Structure formats: structure tokens, C-alpha cells
Image (cartoon, rainbow, N blue to C red; front, side, top):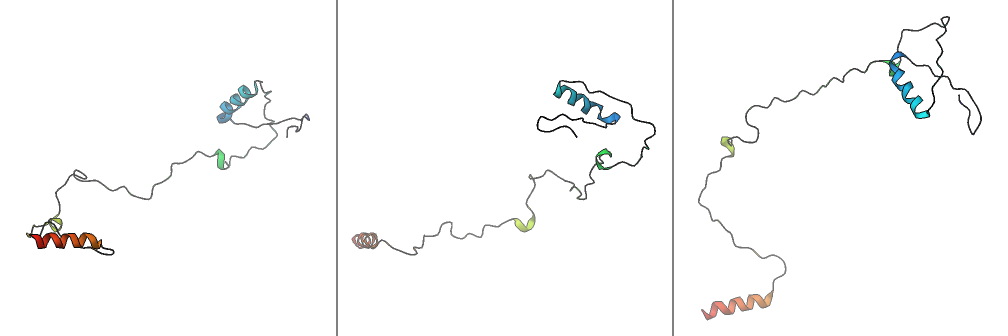
Amino acid sequence: RTGRADAKGTAISFFTKREVDFKTDVELLMNQELLVKDFPEEVEISLKLIGPEKDKQPIKFLMKKQKLDGDGAFHEKSKKNTKVNLGGPSKTKKKTHGSVNRNMLKNQAKKRKDK
């Protein structure tokens, strides 16, 4: 590990051919070139890859896309949704519920009598 709190230390980084670009980015960030040494031959190299080293495989989508037939929203209504005009009243009178303005009702009744 590197030194902490203004103490000196040595950092050792291992990188593969795929990670050379990351090493270059680190060098640019630190404004310093890193010393690169060859990997010792006596060290045994495993061919088994760990999670970050593996190539990411595309996620398989389990949900199937619905195939859209026709013109989408622009279509004729189905037979069950077609309404027939049966000739009922077009407007209904408002029924009063709750509080009623008594003075207004008196004036309306008075106007009816005067007619």
C-alpha cells in the first residue's frame, strides 16, 4: 500500500493488456510516468478469470415483445363497443342536494305565480 498522512510508501499495480488504457489514464491524472517491470516467470499464472476480468455477456430478456399488428391507436371500434342512440333525454335537470338557498326558492316560486 502507499503511504498515508504524508508518509512515504510504495504502490504496486498489476495490469493486463486490456487495462493498459487505464494505466495511461492514471499516469495522465498523476502527471507522472509509472515504472513498469516485467512479470516474474517463476510466478504461476492461472487461466481462471474472476468477475471483473470476464467479458460481460448481454442480459437475456425473458419478456417477449408483443408484435404490433395494424395501425396502433387508429382502428375501428369493436362491435361490442358501438353505442346506438336510443333517443333518451339529452340533458337532465340538476337535482339539489344538501343546503338550499331558501330566498332563491321563494323568488322562483313568486315568478311562477306571476306568469
